[in-house]
Length: 187
Image (spheres, rainbow, N blue to C red):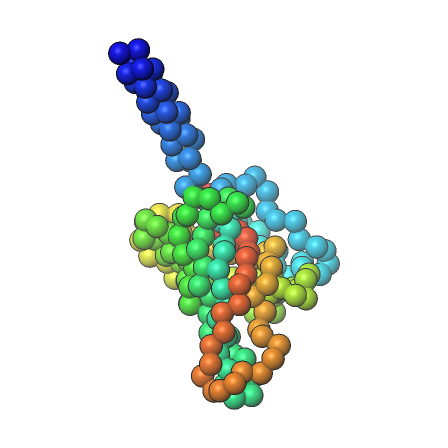
């Protein structure tokens, strides 16, 4: 009988600790809302500064691949495939990033953007460039609904393979990480 009471108390403690942990994890599923824009190495990355009239709304952390296809003479960029997370430890999945380039939240809102011509910088030659992108279209209510600009910064990896492909049409997935900062028009 004493053993049964101890077992019940232990089970209750485990349940309470799991419940406490669960409530601590819930906020991590939202994209983080930093108070400042990213640190851009100046003057190297001045071109990716977001124009006045926009404010930082949130940022996400991407973990995925950049896909390249061998065309017989060179590797051509196909697009990204990445999961977007709320923090830099890749906790709290908030959406995906794929060809377009498109960012889609788990709730269904989407934004498609295009690189702003004449912008970009490469602080690390072993990583894909940092970019400034401007919204082309968006749909659905949610975090991406009123995005105006996106900065891709703090990239690692993702550059095209350095060795030739073995046949035309061969695809390679190159791992990469990045931080995406999303901006909205000031009210």
